Length: 358
Image 1 (cartoon, helix red, strand yellow):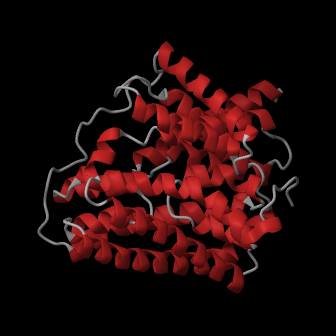
Image 2 (tube, rainbow, N blue to C red):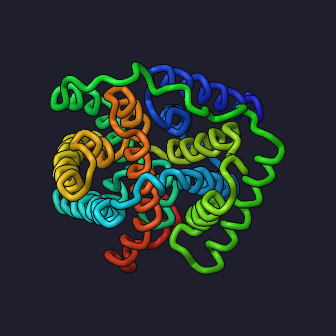
């Protein structure tokens, strides 16, 4: 098969799997679907496909812009009067994740950078994107991140129904504003590309950890807060293309030995995620005790990941959706922004870019 036709077939397979996962209600369907397709192709046709470094860097920068747009002014308004407890809970969540990663590294053969990033709760796409640059094995990080997301997606509705019975709000997640036109507008394309390029250049210039991701993230967050609402948005097509590129880049690097290793990690990862969920519920109790929010609101706001299923649960139970989204969005940014600094600080020379993959 000609190379161009092979890439078209790979793209079509990615679209099909992503659509199926999205129909099942799984979050990050495009990234996860591309990862699954890349994994299958890597095992069947090892070495046949490889994404260029420029493509991956572009996807990193676009992902940074996407994450930065989560910082909305109305979300900050929702945190008025609860800034300190929310900030402390977000910082405590990061520390719990790093502790869980340290324990994981001690009881398994996973190295410290990989275990630490694999356990970071929130911003899975951003964490996977920066993993290789921080000296972690992005294949194992991706496995740990999406195992966490899947467990949260499955467990959250059950836990809400079990521990918070009688809360019934709207039947769905509401109409909302949606993502806008899938193709986006010419202005949105220009703004997104400009922010990605400028942010990536600035991030590398000031030597930010994972600067190609964090530079655009910080620039997009600042512009989102400074400009009137709706001034720009990342075109959904561009966002999903970036997620697909990241998923394929990770998936295509899998080997049979990697799969065997992941099988051995399944039980430790599941136990670590369960422990993290329990610990975050403890933080929810603290947040409830120190602010005006209900325990349900605090629980949904501190759940370690699964933003979209948490939003659906918040609306479906009549919880304070604005507060939940504000805290979850802040936690996501805290995780993606501070995780690379924390990993570099704690691990020093061990958190250095991987040049080659096993």
